[in-house]
Amino acid sequence: MSGTVIDALTYWARTVPDQPAIDFAGDVVTYRELDTWADGVAEDLTARGVRVGDRVSFLGVNSLEWCAAALGAMKVGAISAPFNQRMLAGELTTLVEDCEPTVVYCDSALRSRLDEVHATRGTFTIAEFEHDVRPLRTGTHAAFRAPLTEQSDPTAIVFTSGTTGKPKGVVFTHATIAGEMHEWALMEPIEQNGLRPLLVLPLFTAAGIIWGISRTTLHGGTLLLQPGFDPESALRVMIEGRATTLTGPPILFEQISRVPGFTDADLSHLTTAHVGGARVPSALVGQWLARGVQLRQIYGQTEIGGSATAMPRHEAADHPDKCGFGGIFTRIRVVAADGTDCTRGEVGEILLRGPGMMPGYWRNEDATRSALIDGWLHTGDLGKLDENGYLTFVDRLKDMIISGGLNISPAEIEQVINRLPGVEEVAVISVPDAKFGETPAAIVKKVEGLTEADIVAHCNDNLADYKVPRYVVFVDGALPRMASGKISKRDLRDTYSDVPQTYPKVR
Image 1 (cartoon, rainbow, N blue to C red):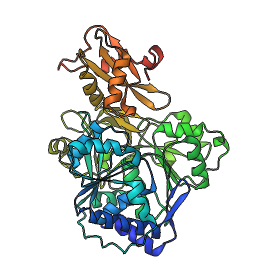
Image 2 (tube, rainbow, N blue to C red):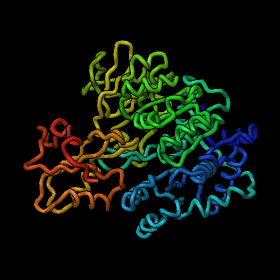
Image 3 (tube, helix red, strand yellow):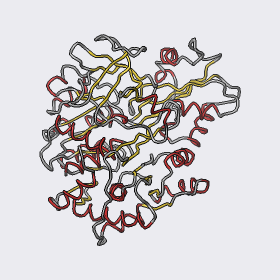
Image 4 (spheres, rainbow, N blue to C red):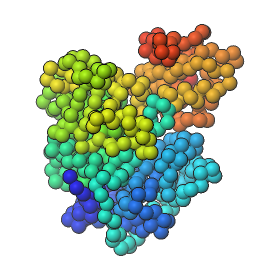
């Protein structure tokens, strides 16, 4: 598989110049306009010293400017390395130290955070979406001569939280993006220029920059981009924009189904509805099936390109807990602790390989060696295969919390709380949440004089808001431990499974 996202952008700008490329809450930019806009960004980046292989980062909410900046960076041959706009200065510093961007684009409202990072790590230039990208939309720009690149060259880094608490940068190459999208195009046929994904998730995720911007551009489709997730707006745009694809965690589909008018909505144009990140409740499947939409469980990780497998349409209703058997080119194994393949129905670690598999983590050889072994991605997730080879996801070995579709590392929160004077033991676990699906709960060995409010305030000062625990539980005595000496989170989850019912929310 050859070619790049920029090759596709140039092609569609010539062949369907007036085709809407992105519809951002009613503000539409065509392929001709988007290509020219990206040319202007590429010129600006070149003037700022950006060259092939340099990193360009983005810090901001979903916007047309964000998209144009990312495509401009790709035109230069730079590596797009987006940041989560909810991160605070300390968290951003870690990412800046890791990927060493030459330029960071940001929303004006977030400039102060970057200024704080720049004060100690002043190796990058700050540019603003409003002042440096938006004016280029209406300018006249010569076609930028994109440099020739190898298919194995990195083009994007997507940071994902790890169990160690430090984010890891998943590398996407031109080949992994093209290969992943080619495989899914074979499995999920798309009419030429007919792909119309509704994207309500953040652009800094793989769902955004890879499955939103890159996939839509490769197919010459129209990205129905929203500033964020609002259930009423999502349903309205889904209907009026005749969206063909919607992907997200179950909570997204649940909240849309509660919007007045959902039960009468014509959703016949929504041909693909993939649900990942958590199991799909049977009742939710029934609600969407009544509208003619089959919710299909998917499984994957950013490290495999995002999605590795989806339940076939004709079987999804009967098996809402299963995730399919892989793709045309994607393979699945489930192995025991000794590396041997599990028998059918036996729980083990899920291993994957396929065209979207990362070549490794950015500047993290140890993590790469642990994840990629003998050509297989070791996911750290538990699952089982049935007699027909269908995968059922069982649990996360990594204890990751997925709250509202965003990954939260318990270890990162634990590290922050452990810095409070007097704290000796703390464990963060996932508990159910009606709004976000899951939310963090901090189990802390009692410290004299330390209150729940103290912990929340300390976390607010050091973590993005979505990572701050919604429950804090103080316990007398030591936390349970395994024979290895590690805190037993399984015992804690069993003991505190009723936290939302027995403890008040602290925020």
